[in-house]
Image (cartoon, rainbow, N blue to C red; front, side):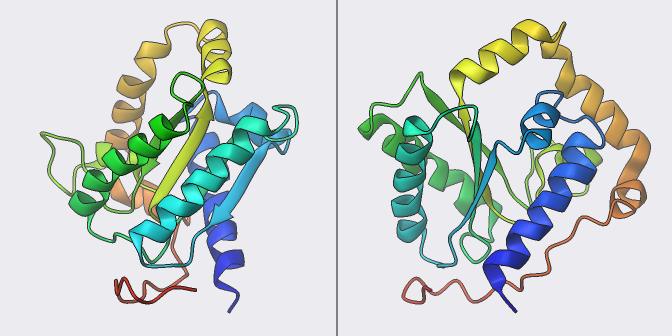
Length: 194
């Protein structure tokens, strides 16, 4: 199995079926339809390798023409399967953004198969809004976000609408979307990378 290809296929399905299909992010459809989403995969289980690739992807996105690449999904299927460890790792990601002086130009959103909002239980359907098949860093241009928010009335209501929708759908409705991770998680051995 070509792991990287499988990860990209799974994430593209998640983006089309859940994010765009359920309109969880009203801004995602335009960049997906125009082919402006870059998919990058880090197959290492070492978070330091993921950070190194994050640095490269941030620089690539900053230099890319937004009409060609507007946003990047950087997935690491074998790194940080524990959500709390992943959540702690996000501070390192923000530090890389700061080191590259890209704060205010690019922001990093995060998704994880076990994502859990504070104050929720692991099985609460609202956590599905930030659950993706693999641990993922979503690199977004601030200018694109600003334009999208200006064009979308009441953007602050998106989260509440999503929570209501996912609570209504429940886990059975989510499973019916066919969102899955077909790439098996390997051991989280920091010495093992590919």
